[in-house]
Amino acid sequence: MPFTGIIILCHGSRGHHAIDDLPVKMKSLVDSIVSLISGDVVVAWAALQFNHPTFEESAASLVARGVKSIVVVPYFLFSGRHIQEDIPEVIKRLTDRYPGLAFSVTRALGDKELFIPQIIKRISEVTPDLWTAIQLASVPPATIEHRSMEIIERLLSQELKFRNGEKAIVKRVIHACGDPQVAELINFSPEAVSSGIDAIENGRPIFTDVRMVSTGINSHIAEACGCLVMCGLDEVGDDNNSSGNSTRAATSIRYLGARLHDAIVAIGNAPTALLALIDLIDNYGVRPALVVGMPVGFVQAKESKEELMKRDVPYITVIGTRGGSSMAAATVNALLKIASEKQK
Image (cartoon, rainbow, N blue to C red):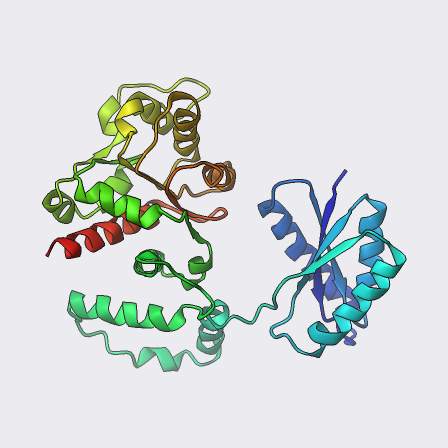
């Protein structure tokens, strides 16, 4: 029986079509959210005005299902009167009606970086001629990177707070994936950056789960820092077959075993490899200097990263299903660049 409920609260509409269209669109939204949430949670939607189910109707439905706390997600752009006044008034009525029922309300959706790509897309749909005037002249790589970092800097939310070195890593990851929204998903343990830089300065090896990550790491900087970059799959060889209950990436991590101690381990593809590493940490005393845990996907990726964040080991990860080889390699490259610049 679920104990936490989530209500996606939209404004509602008087329009004739909203009677039919709104439930379909909101149900699709709810289904998408449900597919990305694990745990004992039930998700519903409601309309603040004009449509059903209302906020109070959805809350009553969740209470009937055993929910003890409700997270309200305003599907609004800005924190206007509805969020400042109307929603608190409804919550007050509901808490009076259901003593012991706890509510929390998320922020509105109006962070600027979330909507810029969509705004550009909408403009391009109706005025495609605006984009044909772009000069396709060759641009020097250094200029491209400099411009990219300037743009990323402008797109970063001012609400994000970074410790030493974290912002440089976040910008590199955004540059690798082209999506500024990931900035809010990147999670650092307190000592992650310093531990990773120390490992590089001491010439510790860098192990990866797949070749795409090792190939993406800047070998010239790594060599200059005295760090060998090795893919676990290369260590065990292509002929090493995994068991029926394990992937080759996971098998290679287990094979490396104690060699991962004090090393940087970058996982950008296989959740099973991260879970195998967590098993080594829990049961065999292996403690990497840094785990870049960024497996991507919809099966075990989110869960494996949640498990990593519970461990007492330095880590950098991307919350949820996002991740990938390019993001993991970009994280390591950012650390390599910071370390190499310190040596100059």
